[in-house]
Length: 209
Image 1: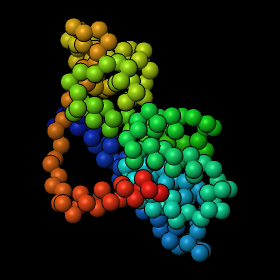
Image 2: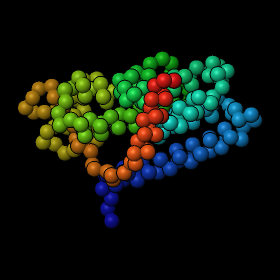
Image 3: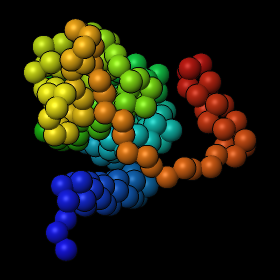
Image 4: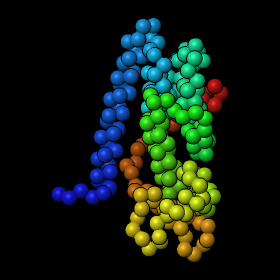
């Protein structure tokens, strides 16, 4: 059976996700088994970055809170990684992209993972825009997806063209407006009132800290 491009991409994403999940488990084990429960800073850095890639912001916050202050002070990159996480909590997409790209280059330990975080955030932002807007200005769209207005226009699919990887086209009738692609419907996940209250409590706690 011939796989469609969509199926091939899904398989690739699944494989990467499995590898990342296994690496996270290994790093969590290293943290637990480290003398005094304090592993090397590279373990903290990579695990924190992986949590951001997984969009597991609760785990990222708890990890940040249990990293000793002395380790944070001696390894400022940890603070830079967590700054990305703070912006992700708030869904401040321009802030996320700024935190990802401002300052020194990421260390070799986390560079590839932070690049993947960047790509994952862009993908989620594009899906959110696709659900929320039938059309949106180039300026607003560019701030959501972390591209310049010129890049947005250049990467757009012609209105009559085949769907593109980016998932948007320019409105042929209204200059300066983008037509986001609607994301494929996903499974509906029921969320109990207790779960909603827990998530709200976590979010308020995060803002207070």
